[in-house]
Image (cartoon, rainbow, N blue to C red; front, side):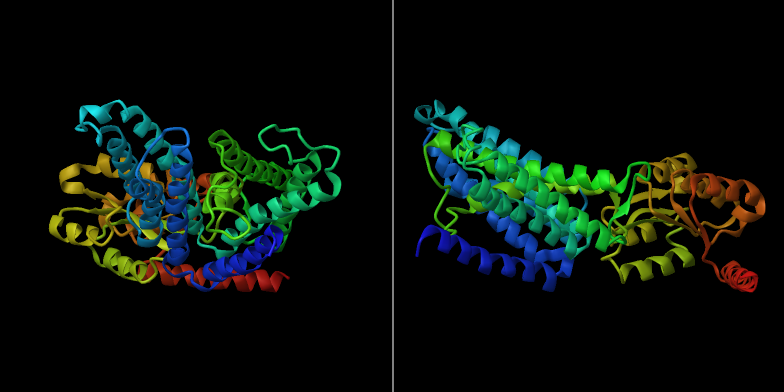
Length: 441
């Protein structure tokens, strides 16, 4: 079987298998897929370390495997198990410290190789691990289709670049010395298919691709997105080609039939992942992402009921702020269930700290279950931060209703009554307004 046949066989078996994992096993924010990413990142780092040995930069295979797995593992703990984001920072610190100091007590014969080890360790830690972290972060978008679209763009761009280059690139090759077989025709083909794929996705799934910047025409967003993805896919391939050429090897390994090694397979994916993640979050609002919730008065009846409901749907909601007036022990018990939430005890920390925390966390929804007039300023702070307000505090409306509703209108946020009496009145008024609109029609 020749190399092309092996490559096609790997493609037609591997790609459907990957898509099946993503589509049929979305549990725990694509935990199975994230484990696959960790494994590929770790093995890719081992292959990279083998190439670096050709340049006299040595690191053990076990260390390379661990360093390559660290950052995507941190991403998986954050995305699939709701661990706080400082896990990523701790991972970076641990990896960097290990690389820097692990050879401090080496024998004098080995000390002269410490700088080589640091160079090799830093390289294996960065590539592909740091880039593959963003592939795991795509799971945080909470949409299998977005992950599959990313892979379609990267694989599709690579495949079409090869096809158009083969058909039309005979007289325009050699523009990039590190990869002389690459052609202008192939490069243009990769860009075009990237633009087409993202354009089709935007128009067939408008509920997923909600445009964040209304002042930019959608076709321009599609063009920018597609061009950036095409460029990053090509650059990922070229970057690995430069590494292989520098190390004097043809392939990074032999694990992938017809493609070479793992690193040969994920080179474009690794570089394109952070670009895709950044572009999506810059241009679009993902309505399927977790809603970030602040619960004020968490130890009261409204707070406890709200948290009980939220805890049943952790896939879609994340508690980021908890507050109580004086029940420290109860607040600590609740906080143990939401380890990433900021906690404020008003009686000890003061009202200013609560207001500051509301402004800093910038929740999507703030549930205000604080009793009495003390709930007014937190309501205003939540509105000012751009958070929708689920209001169980009647005094907010009684004391400063006009001010509160004017602020909500200016910030374009919703105020939703959640306590029994005013929630009932709210729904009656909504129903009555709906009937009047129907009569007018």
